[in-house]
Structure formats: C-alpha cells, structure tokens
Image (cartoon, rainbow, N blue to C red; front, side):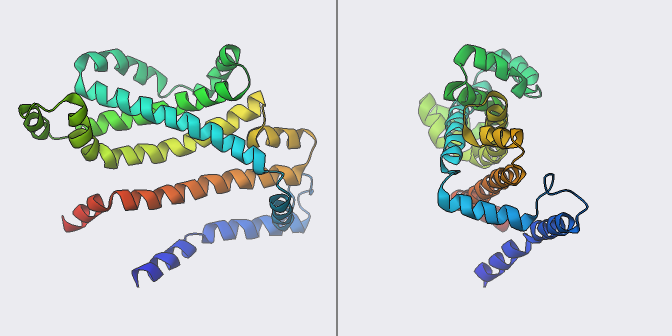
Length: 259
C-alpha cells in the first residue's frame, strides 16, 4: 500500500510539468509566436526522439556528465576534508574562514577566463571550475555538521586513545552524514550549471557547446531539445539522489519517526 501511494504521489507531482507542456503547445500552435522563436512542444519531443535513436546527443551528454562528475568528486573530497579540519582544529578554521566567507557568495563563473588562461579550453579548465564552484557547499556542510557532533562523543573516543582517522571515520563522519547528504544535493545542480555554463562560454563540446552552436545557426528546435535534456538530467539526478539518500539514511529517518 505504501508503495502504491508513493507511486501515486510521484505521478501527481509531475502535473505542473504536464501543465507547462500543454501551455507551451497551445501558445506555439496559436501562431502568436513565430516557430523560429518557439517551436511546438510536440515538434521538440519528436526531434528529441529521433536524436535519441541516431545517437547525436550521446557524446555531448557523456562529455558534460564526465566533466561534472570529476569536478564534483574533487570538490567532495577536498570540501569534506577541509570542512572537518576546520571543525577539528582552530588554526585551520582561522585560515580558511575568511576565504570561505569571501568565495562562497562570489560569482565563480566569472573566473572562467582565468581557468582557461591557466589550463586551456579542454576538459581540465572545466573540471577545475566545477570543483571550485562545488567545493564551498561541501565545506560549509561538512564544517556545520561536524560542529554539531556531541563533544561528549569526541571526548569519549579520545579517552580511549582513538586515532584522528578512526575518530573521523567512526564518530564524526556517521554523525555528520545527514547534513553532508544535504550538501551533496545542493552541489549536484551547481556542478551541472557550472559545466553547461563553461561549455557555452569556452566551447569544447558538451551540451553547452552544442546549445550555443545550434543557437548560432538558428536551429531553434535543437536548442529546445538540448534545454530539455539539461532539465531532464538535473531532474533525474535529483530524484536518484533522493532515493539513494533515503536508502543510506534509513536509520536517521527511523529515528526521526520514533522521536
């Protein structure tokens, strides 16, 4: 019964998207907007279906996902280590706190010309930009979650001569996992946006490069096809992550229910 209700709720949550598609189709069919500016939704879906079987978008999608995934992984490793170190040692916190305060709200995509100057226009510059964009949510989430770990737990572990690595792995990391998962959900769309934006500005293939190329030649239907792919990638990755989170944090959700 629970699975049936979950499926019903999942289908019902899609109604705004269905309503948006219907409005899109009606406006495009009404003739109020020329097709070169707004092709019909049905035409975009038909073109996307053809592109799916022809494989024209396969390599751009894989290229963008590769750049986003590698940059995301680098940001997660660096961000978690720095965030926990800031919570653990005052000296590290004093060193990184001003940098985080200045860098987190900054428009990081504006640094893309510097990354291109230093690392070229290929994968390296885009991967490092994604890592730079995503590292701040991880640092903030890791630092905040580690600071909320009970001091009594840490003192008890230290009283038993627990090493720093064991303390992190057996005490701090499990207690911080719920907040870290929230940081991951924030970082996922950041990684995709940074990847697409870098590709649109610097070229070098990927979905962002394909989008700019199609727009340059007024291939409007293809532009909307690529936009739909970008939206679907973000939606699918968010849904998949939420399912993973509910599986990994079963113990946390059960504790919330019992409390």
